Image (cartoon, rainbow, N blue to C red; front, top):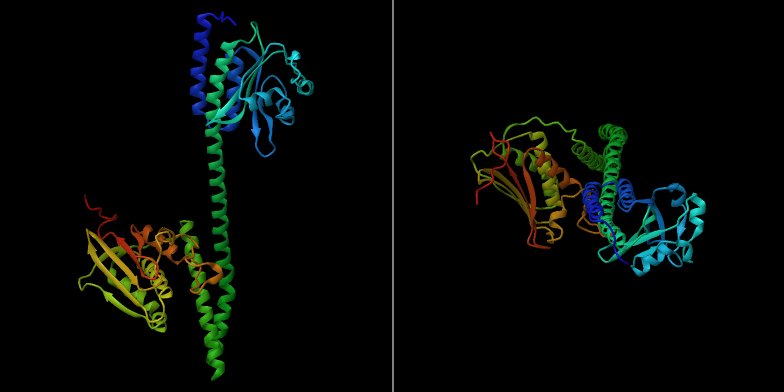
Length: 421
């Protein structure tokens, strides 16, 4: 076929394609993008209408994703079979089709035209592909003036290639947004559960502790031992509730801080005193590596001490009876460093970056030996980082112990000192 197209027309069409390309690259909403494509196809080729059919992998069929010149809502409900249809042939064979009289091709389905009250007289269809995978078909319908020719096919193929990439990107962004929304919804549900559970448990727990304390003063002998067990269990439950509340406040950014200058040694010793009974019950040997000179930090001790309580609790629980725990601090590279080292079960390289995640457990739930909700280190990380610090874990491997290290800016500064390389 001889191409008799005027140079001025070709230049105009190329300019239109350039403009369309810019629009496609800046449009991320899938529905808007589909409208841009069909409008561009109809304008560039001077047609009455254009349509996009996309491939439905689950149902192995094509469906109208967008169309001009007809009732699109009706068209969207019409399934297009892969076998025996013009669009299906274009898709399966990955070849363009030019029909300037569709009535001469038995593959043309008149049912679509009848349902949407649009008569298709001529058709140019090209495949849409991305990364060697067919994604759909782009059609131009009823060209005005001259019949469809090879030049039209080249133009529509260029547009189809651009459109396929743009659709792929839009779908990817849409999927990412949905995943982000799902994660956000899950986080909100989890946060609401923590707030609700901790609130609802406080009142009955307070009654249990109050009544058990009253009984403790009234009974003797074996009865007193039973009351002690009740109070011990209630105390553990209160610790769990306080942890849940702390995590919720950190997530909701509702925790208030009252920073002041405090020695790091004071914070560490306060944390140890709180955990001393459990450490002694486990027969752990606890040693200290603390300098005599005060290591001053600007922090809220009411929030920093619980962070180290959680770190110490983690070390005590995951160290077998009679293990060794070292609590230390020093000034390093302009920062105040603190650490808790244990001779416990250790961590694999895979576990190291995950132990600060919410509800992460280092052991399978059905064979757990050490207990806990898996939020202690999450809370410690939040309390430390909110006060300008940094926390991480180090371990040489399983059964080789773990060290939790913390860096805090010294008093008088608000950020960590980063040594120059």
